[in-house]
Image (tube, rainbow, N blue to C red; front, side, top):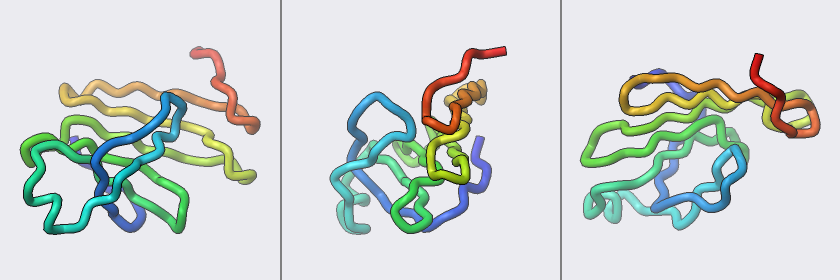
Length: 101
């Protein structure tokens, strides 16, 4: 499942909200990660998240890959689950979901 996600990795306990891109919360230190079975790794370009991985017992359970419009709004979210099934969601320049084709 794993493909490269550009950016600087940072590790978190969980996320908040239901809108994409997910907002990861409760950042973990390297020592804290060693004591966790489940956590999220977000890949950041400054403050903007390029994607994330949900890690469960050392394996990738879920991946999100995000791309953005020039105005900074989310353009596309590619989501890959544990069975390697892919879902692609597209958004207009105002960040509103576009209907699936």
